[in-house]
Amino acid sequence: MRSDALSLPFWSADEVQAALRRALMQIEARRVLAYPTETVYGFGGGIDRDSVDALVALKHRPPGKPFLLLIAGPDMIERLNLHFPSYAANLVTRHWPGPLTLVLSGGERRVPDRLRGPEGGVAVRWTSHVGIARLIRAHGDAITSTSANRPGVPPATSAAEILTQWSDAVARGQLRVLDGGTLVPSAPSTVLDCTGRLPRVIRPGAISAATLRETLPRLIGDA
Image (cartoon, rainbow, N blue to C red; front, side, top):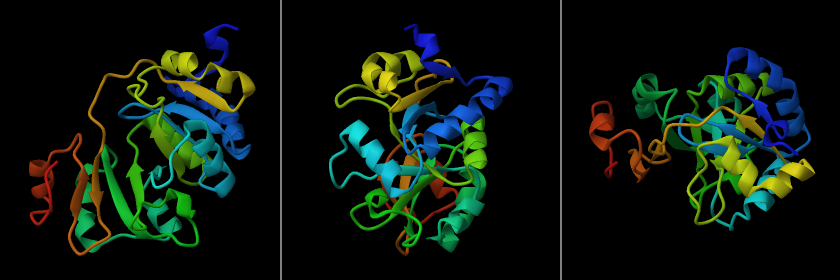
């Protein structure tokens, strides 16, 4: 089967609109989507337990390594019942949407334990990818996200890489691919732990510590 028959074009506004119905069907069936983001291609789906289990099975994710959540606006933080510290308000105003992931507390009634880090926080990013933000709004809830790659292989920057590496899962319908073109290689998102009294860098990334300290002078760690 041709690779273009196994993926859905997801580049222009018209293509995104045309792909939404089948992408939402994949999420509602508790299966996995591969999709472009502002950094690399990701795998994800719904945040319910069955959808998370399907993602874990596809990625062979070891215990203790959670997935982050992508949202399409700060209102989704409240919908997830996550706690947003006051010191993060200016940070979000300046850097969201974009490559900044915040680990937040709360969400006990909305977020499965499998999506929590070792200390109980939930990683969240407001995506700046217009097509994925539109998909999330159409879905009406956050979606999970993890890099689209096999262990030891760099994250995919094109749909063709995913179709090559995961051909069996695509053929079975376990995985559906949204083709947003070839992405320009970029740094991953910067990850900040915002569950404590002061924000702390967990993973350096696209936004430097110096830039973050313009908003958060008391930031702990380097990025």
